[in-house]
Structure formats: C-alpha cells, structure tokens
Image (cartoon, rainbow, N blue to C red; front, top):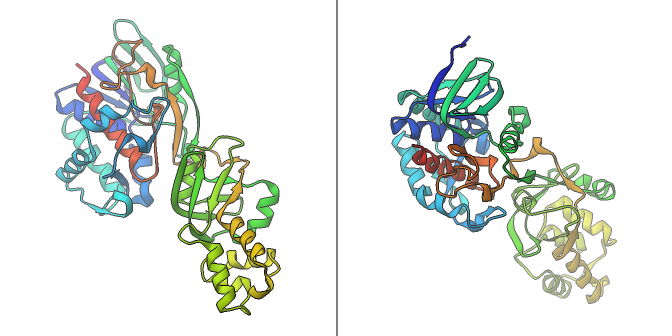
Length: 395
C-alpha cells in the first residue's frame, strides 16, 4: 500500500489508448509521469479492439470523418500527428500492419501486442503506472492533489484520459465528465455512438426471421450517406452502415435505406418480366438479395409470376426496396456502443495543447472530448493525435 505523498510533473488519469500514448511521449521528453487507472489491466479496451486485431488508424483522415460541435477542432492535432506519423511510430516498435478496405490499417498480429508495446515503452521511459487505483478526490491549490486508494499524489499538470461511457463491462465510467464539471467546464450531452439501432415492436416481429441476414446497402440521414453492409438482428439493425449512421441519428429521425443501391430495380424487374414472365417474384429477388430477405418480400407481395404484376405494381415494389423509410425507436445502450458521442465541450479547450481555458495545467484528451470518429480507425487516430499534442505542450 502506497501512503506517502509523491509529487510528479504530470499525472495522467486513464491508462487506455490516449493515456498510455501521452504518458510515454511526455516521459520521453524527460517528464516525471504518474499514470493511474482504476482497472487491474491497462489498455483493456484497446486490447480487444478491431476483433482483437486493432484498427489503429486510417490512411484517409479528414475533419469530415469526425462529429463534433466544432468541426474544425480536430484539424490541428490530426495534422501534427498524422496517420503516417502513427504508422512510423508503431513500426519503430515492430508493430506491422495490413491494409483493409477504405484505408483501414490493422495490426498484422494482435491488439494485445500493440498494448504490450505501449506499456513496455512506458516502462522503458520510467513512467510510474499504478493500476487498481481508485480515485476519491481531486483538488487544486498550488498543485493538483489526487487522493486515491493507494495514497495521495500531487502534480503540476493533470491530464484526464478517462475515455467515455462505452463498454461499461470493461470499467467505463463518467469520471472524466465529473472532473470537467467540478472545474466548471461545459459538457455536450453524451449518447451511444457507432451502435446498433432498435426496431419498434411491430417491425421487430416482422423482421425477426431475418436475424443474421446481411446485405450491402446505402443509408441516408438528411445530408449524410453511408454505403456498407447492413445486418438484421433480433431487435433491429446493425452492421457497419448502421453503426456509421447511428452517430448522426437522433430520436424521431427517419432513415432512408436502399437495399439494392447498385442497380435500378424497377428497370431490372421490367426486363425480367419481359424475358422470364413465368418466374416467381421471390426467385428474381433471390438473385439480388439474401434468400431469406427475398422470401419475406416475395410473401409480402403475394409471390406471383412476374407476368401477373403490372408495371405500376413493380414500380411500387422497387420503391419499397430502394427507398425504405424507417424510424428506429432508439439505439442500444453503451454496452453495445463502440464509442461515446458528446463529452467535454471543445470550446473549453485549446485545439493545439488540449489545456482547458479556465484552469491552467488541466488537460483533456481522447474520447472524453466532444470529438467522435467514424468507424474505421478514426477514433484511435484521434486518441494518438490528441495525446501526442498534449504531451508536447506540457512544460
């Protein structure tokens, strides 16, 4: 049990992606750093990310891939520590990568190896890391005083890298937001992001036979459109297309889904009616859609031979499939969310240093801030970039 009051130049709260990255880079600059986390294991969420392969960045980074009240806030940090900088850093630690679709870079081995490499760097540069450390109070006089279950510590600078509310089973909490409020900072309302959507009771019953069925779609909400896979679940919709749009969705928003975005379905059905008039509707649809989905739509439309449908009827069928209007009743909760949208208001922070404008030497980095990336490595790149810039700023 540690009981003595120890002073550090920097105390970082949260040993996730941004906390580890900030700690090691600050320590490389010769700073005396204490890294605290209430978990028994550092980088817990990082170690399971990307299906345990860790999609650690994306080569195609721009502000358009981020959601924030201030869409310009992320620009400085992403330029100062770019995806190329990220790749070079991890390659220096012998972390190689494979590139998947849309510029997504994954570890060629495991996420756990990446986490272990960050921890090894922290140890190499003499970061003091205390896990299973419960924080009980933080105060500021001449220094920041941090009271914990392992003793009392003080520092000149305090960095909050505590993450958001997603993955509560891995220990996520509202700690960072409470500290922000304690020091008078504004919080943008939080909600689950990159999260599945839920049907109403009627649609849940109607579509339950499709659970596990996937197809490539385009999905639109106002001016935002994504083209990717959709997955039917037992209570609603998931898959990359849904996770992407969920960050932008708000209660009562209507979604427009095109189940066959690569063709003109009406023209296709009319042509099939001419060439194969006796073929059943569900048979034609099964050539284009997963069989279970084709069967369900066929049943809904009486599943007749194509010749028995008027062109107007075929047009209505095409409209239903290529302009499906859906209003979810909500999202799943934080246990199913990849990240948390909202957080510490970016107007409270410097976009170059991440220091708060109200309190000298108090910093917030990573997911706890109101900057949320799209699916595909954008959120981890934000963790690295914000942490790196913060580490350089602390004197």
